[in-house]
Every structure is written in C-alpha cells, then in structure tokens.
Length: 478
Ligand code: FAD
Image 1 (cartoon, rainbow, N blue to C red):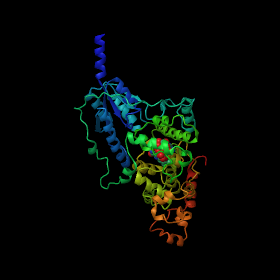
Image 2: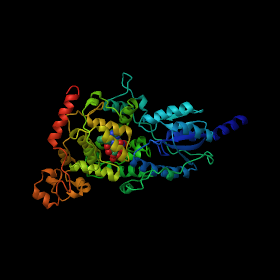
Image 3: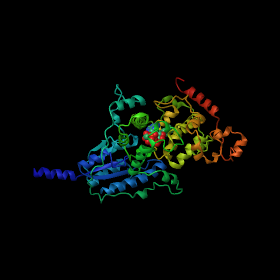
Image 4: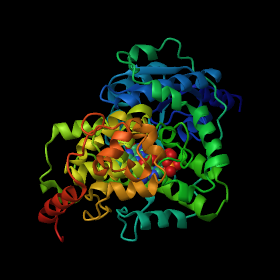
C-alpha cells in the first residue's frame, strides 16, 4: 500500500503541459482542468510567425499580458515561444518532462495541421478537448452521417440534444517547476503598433482579458439583452449587441459560459442571442469540413465570376471614402475601433462584392487585418454568405440597397453623423445620399461634393444592374 501511495504521489508530481491557443482563460478550460487533475501544470503559448492581422496582434498582446498575470496569481508561469508549434511544443514538453500535452480543439486549418505535426513528434500523448465551441462539432451530424452545410438543421440538431455542457470552474492549480525553461518576453514580440500608433481607438473601447470579457457579459445581461432581438440591427445603438466577439475570438470567455449565463431566460431576445452563438459554431463547423473556406468559393461556379480588379476602389472602400455614407461610417468605425456592427458589416460587404464587383477575398483580408474579432471561420463564412457563394448564401440577386438599409437601420442618422462628421450638418433627408442633395442644401451644410466628401464610384442602380448581369452570366440556375 505504502508503495502504491508513493507511486501515485510521484505521478501526480509529473508536469502536464497545457498548450494554450485561442483559449486564453482559466475558467471553463477543459484542457487546464485535465492537467490540474493529473499533475502539476506547465503553461505554453506559441506565436506562429504567420499569425494574424494588425488589430488582432494588438489584442493578443494585451490578452496574453492579462492571462500571464492571471496564471501567475496561481503560481503558474506562462512560457512564451515564437516559431513553428510542430517544433516548439515537443521541445518544451521534453524540457519540462511533461507526462502529456493538453489543448483545446481548434477549427483553424493551420492549427489542425500543427496538431498532427506535434502529435507525430511528441513522445507523450497530445490530448485535445472540446472547449471553443458549444458542443463537440465532430459529433453534429445529419441522419446521413454527414456534417451539416445549412444552418437551420445544424442549429436544430444541437438544440434538440439539450443545453451544452455546463462550464467548468477555475481549477486548483499546482505549478510545475519550469524556472529553467526558456521563455520569450512578450514585449520583444513587437505585437503593438509603434510608428504610427494607430491603436488609440482600440485602447479606448476594449479591455482584453478574462476579466474584461466577464465585465462585458455582465453589462450585456444587465443593459443589452432586453430588446436585443430588435436593437441588434440598429447601427447607432451602442448597446444593441454584446460586443463579446473579440473576447470569444480569443477564448477569454467560452461560448458555454455565455450560453449558461443566460440561465433559463426564454423569449425572443434570449433565443435570438443563442441563435447568434450557434452561428458562430456553424461557421467553425463549416471551416472544419471545408478548410478551403477562406480561399475558395464553396459554390464552384463563383470562381468563374469576372471580379473587377480595381485597386483604387478597394482602397477607397478600405479607408471609408467610397461616397456611400453608411459604408464609410462602417469602414471608419472598423479602422478606429477594430469592430463593426453586424448589419453594417453586411452592407459594406455587399457594396464591395456586388456594386463594386470586387472579389470577396479582398474584403475578407482587410477585415482580418483590421478587426479585433477577426476569426477565420466566422469571417470567411459571412463573406461567402454576403457574396452569395457559400453553401447557404443569400441569393446573388438579393443585393442590399445601401440607402434603404441606412434609412432603416440608421434612421436618425446618428451612426453616420458620428463616423462621417463632414456630413453631420446635412438634414436627415439627404444625409444618406449626399450625391442627390440639391447644391443649396450641400452648401448650407458646408459640404463640397468631390472635395470634402467623395461621390460614389458607381450609381446605386447602375451598380446593381452590372452585378446582376455579371452574376447572371456565370452563376448556374439564374
Ligand atoms: P452579438 O450580436 O452580441 O452576438 C453574440 C456573439 O454571437 C458574437 O460575439 C459572435 O461570436 C456570434 N455571432 C453573432 N453574429 C454572428 C455571425 N453572423 N456569424 C458568426 N457568429 C456570430 N464575427 C466574428 O466573430 N469574427 C469575424 O471575423 C467576423 N467577420 C464577419 C464578416 C462579415 C462580412 C459579416 C457580415 C459578419 C462577420 N462576423 C464576424 C459576424 C458578426 O458580425 C460579429 O460576430 C458581430 O458583429 C460581433 O458583435 P457582437 O459580439 O456584439 O455580436
């Protein structure tokens, strides 16, 4: 008996390495939980050189900073390394003498490839846990045994099997002795912009880290959830949505935590909010089954579309100089805060891909560079949806009219006035269509079209007809 007890004690002293990826939290972390119950804990984050756009790297810096402090409160040091995970994870596992490596499943193609590489080179097991999605996406299957490619049956299948598993608490951690293991300094990674420092707007709006995420959720439950179903579409209404997307993107809070925080609230607000969380899982599910999602149209005939190469129009769109106020407001909000309202994301994406006939991949790449919530799965799936080329896309002939959209979702013009201040003095009637305003109205509002504010590159009807003609020629069945 004594021998067995000693043996158990020895085993439980053996470190377990947790390889953190897009899951920078202590609570509801099944990989951390597994490690904590198996032995002492060592923690690793590996920065891949090819990782992420500028705004995402800003977020990552602050998120890692907060997370390292949180771990340190439990006596655990976060080992930071830059390079290929396939080389680094086995090396660090060896130097800490790990009995196993624990991580959370990722839908990202490059991380799944890294998992295979790490798994092949590790001398100890690599165990992957479900923790970034509401449910185990590999188990969500249609009757045919195939994964779902359409949202509604996917969501129904998940809802039918009851609520997702309850979140796990923060485990009691015993730190492994890793003092001798080399770690980079976060500051040396140079993730923050310096010259120029464009991150002022981001700093003003966001608090990356697990505590920032919890505070956002609490504020949303108190002030935002009631009325969400209606207000979520209103561009000017700051409290209309939860703003949890970057926290979910970086795993500072899990979707299960968010889901369970709603309790058993029923009604259209809570149901609608749950449906949005399910859209996030659906996008991850699509990326897992179709890793080419970011690069190729899921509907093959869209690869034949004669996208226009127009670097000038793309740059004007990126910088919020398209001449369509609601589009420019969205693009400036994105540049300034790293985030854009969902409805406006749809409007700007539609303007780019339909009226301007510019390839959705150009827009998706800009989003990934500038969004703090830039997520390969959600971004690619939504761009394909708007462009009409996804598995479940809005039909190409449904072309958003930005004027109608703006009048509906920014009815009082507050959103455009905030982000396009040079138009602020225009009366409501002309605010969303300055190109049509009489000279005297423009003059009284201090707007010189073409100088203070651009004219659109193409008229609304002309752009719509050009898109319909191009799509109609190349897309089957239309
Ligand atoms: P809420 O309305 O409070 O929703 C709660 C959560 O549900 C969000 O945080 C998000 O995780 C999820 N969610 C909501 N809508 C969607 C959706 N349409 N698809 C998938 N998940 C959703 N979301 C990203 O997280 N990253 C992206 O890179 C991204 N790119 C997009 C690109 C385009 C062209 C479009 C149209 C949408 C994109 N979205 C993306 C989805 C959506 O716009 C954002 O998730 C949402 O605006 C985030 O704000 P919120 O947290 O306040 O959302």
